[in-house]
Length: 396
Length: 191
Ligand SMILES: NC(=O)c1ccc[n+]([C@@H]2O[C@H](COP(=O)([O-])OP(=O)(O)OC[C@H]3O[C@@H](n4cnc5c(N)ncnc54)[C@H](O)[C@@H]3O)[C@@H](O)[C@H]2O)c1
Ligand SMILES: [Zn+2]
Ligand SMILES: [Zn+2]
Image (tube, rainbow over all chains, first blue to last red; front, side, top):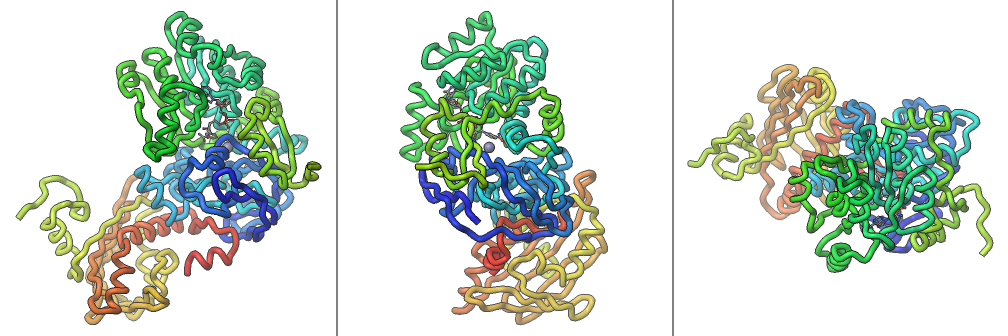
């Protein structure tokens, strides 16, 4: 089959590799019909996530048709399914608590050592996201092997297009969980850093959960425009001072809840951010954390901090004092996708959540390397790229 | 003699004397190094005990163990992978057994790698069962011994942890997780 493989920083290629096979009783093989490139994939593309190996197949947002099933799979050939990016067994203690991203068994035993050493306890497996999270082949390919297919994938009802439901695999539940982790109360003002897919779904979710106002922060005009469409007020951090603006817009109180949907590659010419970048280039630190610092600084006393953004390693200058003195609460984590899928599918069917607005480009799987470059270089216009293995290759 | 005054298991002690007393506590101890690992498994204690007690099941989740032949109710013969395609072998004797709770074993005389240990099963309420393996072992001397020692010393604690995780996966999910996507890759991983 054809598959998008990682080779090095800024070097991804479409290669021909072996087709996947059923290996365990609960497996299924999915023929991919749509698969997206994620902001998280850019962290891999930029070489920020350790334990990548040349030849690793990327992709964790995908859906398709069931073409083969193991004896214990509950799926049937021909069904259309969306697959959650977290690989969870459904039967361990954490899955029982619906903390699917903390599943004990989704990550192969040998690979769990890395997470155990780095984080104290290993997390679940993830598709196409380094060997820290299992080393599983991802779904930017023609076919993929899906473990635990009896608990993960959700069957898509007839009449829904791929583009409407594809984001159930990651970013829609992630934006939703981000808003849920902000413990929004009626009348609240919620500030969201980053108007990428995760931030934009967090904006929509925050309103659905009763937020009175949402203030969205970014520097890309087009992305801010999309946030505005959903009712958010905006701050362009290149034109305005974020902290000052937030304080004035909230009558000197600060936002009740803050959401960091930026992550370890924060943009912007801020002193702390520049120091982070120098440290990263000298291997003295790993993560660029300007947005979470600023979010904690701006958050009102006794407020809530929600951090869907991905961080991998260590940070400097974390404002622990502000965090403690103001009595803040922080919630974060890889999304427990399986927990949110059924209700969010329902919300899509009911027309309560808009998903297709996000897609700016659709292209062939063969064009994926071009897609990565576009997404990386032009984030203003390129909001989301969906790869379709069936699509014709664009003329050069 | 310094004995720890806290409640931590002797397998986690920084004090040599405390570790020595831990080795002595392993039934009929053979070996001078000690490792201990616990894992919580979301299944009933009796079910886990029964699977483990049938030693011929062990190669299904212990990657280094090639084969276990049952010789009698208390004795078994073990064939374990060593570097360069070699194997090491020994007979193991059960020295203590409490149904549903505990199995202790020791290797017979002339074992390639003298070892002894105990595997304990304790109720953990709604979380299932805590399974604790405590193993004392003695890497062999000599030239061949050195190679074997390298294998066993490489990270016996990590090996034990991985084996217990695979046991947990098998018991909780009915299968052992793999990131391979073809049978060929999976076979290469196991080799
Ligand atoms: N928790 C999870 O399970 C999960 C799942 C998916 C994605 N994520 C993470 O969420 C984050 C966002 O993902 P995405 O797909 O939306 O990414 P994205 O790269 O498309 O969007 C990030 C946005 O943040 C903006 N930004 C950069 N610096 C900023 C700053 N200083 N202040 C305000 N905005 C700034 C960028 O301009 C961009 O629009 C990433 O870190 C991603 O890895 C987490
Ligand atoms: Zn994603
Ligand atoms: Zn689980």
